[in-house]
Length: 116
Ligand code: FES
Image (cartoon, rainbow, N blue to C red; front, top):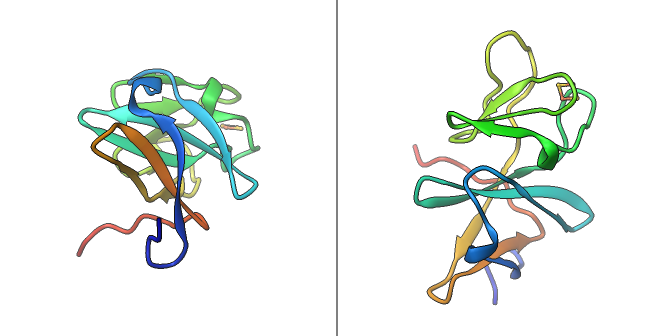
């Protein structure tokens, strides 16, 4: 199915996703993590912008994910890096969930933009 710039690639079922354990997938040769945040599904780059640790092995608590390597944390609402670190925000990708609970990512990956 076309998303305007490419196609939507089904990559998981909503039932595969949790609020506290990221699911790691590879899309367009990029590592991506998916998880549920409240009633939404979010998709972020799966490698830490510091030294590329796999965030799928990170710890999720209080709306943030903590890198398993050096413990930088990133807000799961927008990917922003938490206090004590000068790192870029995690790239957030466009994701959709259809009525059957199939979770899809745009391919090529599309950076999610926030409405202004
Ligand atoms: S690799 Fe993630 S904080 Fe260093």
